Each structure stands twice: as C-alpha cells, then as structure tokens.
Length: 296
Image (tube, rainbow, N blue to C red):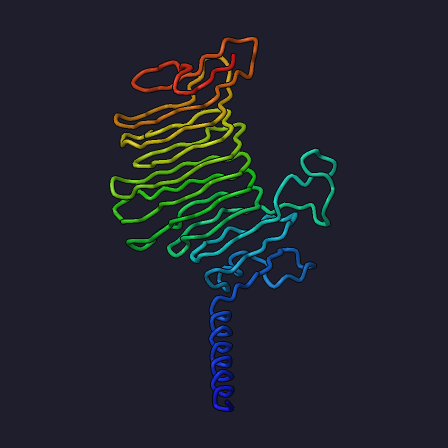
C-alpha cells in the first residue's frame, strides 16, 4: 500500500511539473505603453514594446494627446488602443471612463514577416502598410483589423518576391479605406464586413486581390481590378448610399468580376433621381434583381 501511495505521489509531482512548464511556455504578457512621462508606463513607444514582446503578447496602448510614433510589427501580437468617440457629452459615448483620450499613430504601422495572426484594434487614426525589403516567402496571413476609427490600409505586395497574404478580416471599423494590390503569383484574400465608410472610396482592388464585402455601409464606391490584371469581389448584403447617377461598383479591367447580391442602394437626396450603376464594359444600371433593392 505504501508503495502505491508513493507511486501516485510521484505521478502527481510529475504532472504538476509538466503543467507548470506548459503554463510558462504559453505565458502571455500585457505590455503597457503611454508616451506621457507622467504616466510612468513601462514603454513610451509602441516599437519598444513590440521589440520586448514575444509571440502571443498583448500591447496595450493608452490614450494620449500626443500621437504615437510609427512602428514595425514582425511578431504575432494583439495591439489594442483605448477606442474612440470619447468626446464628453456626445451621444456615441457619454462620459464614462477616467481617460477620454484616443490613440493615433503618426507615420503608420508597417507589417513585416512574422506578423501573421496579429490583431490591431481600438485606434483612432491609423495607416497600415507593408514594411519594405521583406524576404522571399514572407507571410502576412490571418491579420485582423477591427474596431478602429479613421483607418487606411494600403497593402501592396507587387514585385518579383513571393509573399502570402490570405485570411485577412477587416471588421467593425468606422471610416475606413482599403487598397489591396497583389500580383499574378501573390494573391490577396480578405473579408471586409460590418464597417462604415462615410466620405471616401471604400476600397480599391488591384492585381489578383480577391475580397468579400459583407454587411457594410458604403457611401461611395468599390473599384475592382483597377490596373489591368483581373481581381474579383463578392459584394453581398451591403447598404450603398448615393445620389444622382453614381457608379458604386467599377470593374476596371478585362476579366475582373464582382457578384453583387442582396444589397440595398439608398438615395441620399430625395430631390434628385437616383441611378446606381456598375461599370462593367461600359456603364450599366444596377437593377432590382438578385435580391438587390433600390430605394429612391
């Protein structure tokens, strides 16, 4: 009996050591950033926090009256800002937290090899680009960009270098511009859903950029295959808004395609006749077929 008890005790000790080792290996650290010296944060720049982080860490960027410097992301991290719409007394977000400051990035964020699986959220004023001089077979896969305000994504992987950029999710952003440019070998795939865009061309797809647009509110246009090599888009369940004769979807090159079903086209000026159009080998009116609805 004593031998059995000792044996069970040894098993429990080994199991405990294994669990401790696994927890240490999978430890996730939150790294706080604030560029106000009075805040006494461990990091005053996002780049310093990224440099110190390991894959899986969280970078928590606090609101500030001073813009944060741009940075390069080369690890799988979650980078979280404080959010937006903090103005006192606004209906979007009344006074409900101690710090009503947003966080914006001056100079932008640059994605580098190793960033796959990262999430960027909670910023107000952010430009996202690819870092220069990335090695062959660099990957920029499964990037999530969500819950930001005033964000511009300009992701261009043209050139002779082989890259991979698949599985992007861009969702729940307010005022967003997306531009994706691939090549005949570097195809970009992304889902753009549940975003609001108020005052600029919503998206520009070029050179093998294949993007799905679902459940967005779009006050302007989507340009598909704009520079001579075909791209494709699935454009479903969105609300487009415009007035007069307006081209909401433009297929700029031979072979480009867009399926557009179950969208609502809404007139923003009832004093004018609303004619939503798609440019596909000449201008064609969008009609109330395939589930599309035109509200005049």
